[in-house]
Length: 235
Image (cartoon, rainbow, N blue to C red; front, side):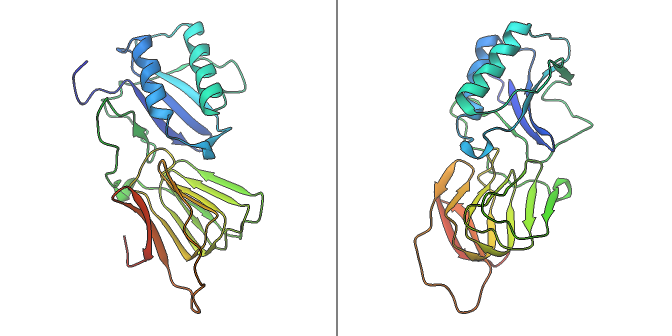
């Protein structure tokens, strides 16, 4: 299949977890290859997230194929299958419009294609507000868009979003923006001292530095393949 607009697997984030949408025109081997390519760079911040398989209309995967794909995603990528033996849902063809468009879903890249990094339409963006400080052991995930934390993210706490992460306080824990593969995502914080910082599939730990006397908004973005932290002057 040489059509550049064709995708056999698409991963989207919802409040209840992830949905893996499979195109009916793809062979089982093509589906498996696309799943591996799409999930290879998710990292461990989504471990334990529930993933549900949906497929294009007019195609019915066998129960054996469905169980194989769930087993593959669980064993190799740490994604959890649904709790119950629910039927695989049907969805329109991947290249056609859909009435329900989740935010920041990223299609599987065809071989040799560049990593997705185009900004999303602002009118489609969603945001989850966290109105308290996150303490050690607390984890917040939002796979439909951006997370805004009104408070600090302390060491041992973790924030994961498919879009941008904005922290109106100190970032001293773990932040993973663009968790579904969007390397155009950014992390913004009043004071950037994370134990780990990840954007898309790129992980970094900023070097130790003296704390500023007066907090100033900073932004972490990917530039030329590296995560760069600089003063925030707007998106």
